[in-house]
Length: 159
Image (cartoon, rainbow, N blue to C red; front, side):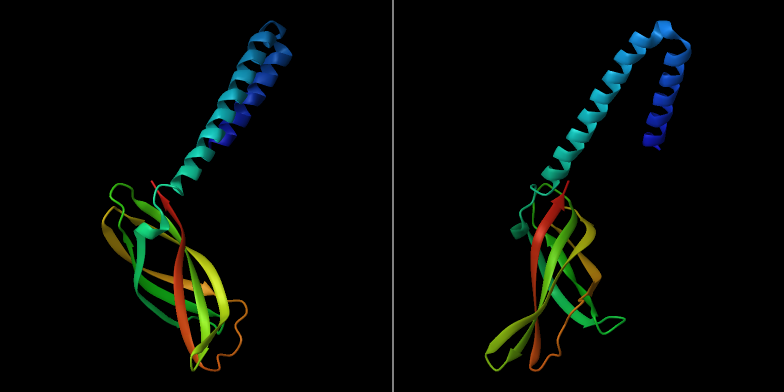
């Protein structure tokens, strides 16, 4: 909605500058100020977005009760579990996790699939929430031994 309003305002200013030449200098100053304000807002939003990923280190978010079941097709899995926010101040708004499938034979394991996915979940400080996530794995060879799953939290976004 805001981009449409800005475009309309610029078109009105161009129209006024065309038909009211005495206002051209004034409209030019307003246009320059508008671009400055828009640039500042974009810069500030970018800074805030970067801060969201620095507020909680991945070590303050824990995964537990992780379970996996087959998804709708042979190349996807439904991952369920609980995500806990151990931070004292900030609320988690999303977490990027990495799921790794290993094919284990006796004592040796080989990674056969690894994908990352984002969990969008609002978790206040010192609380936990259950989640369910469908993860597609585009290429998974046939598991010969026993399938073992490992999970890691890559990024935490908080406000």
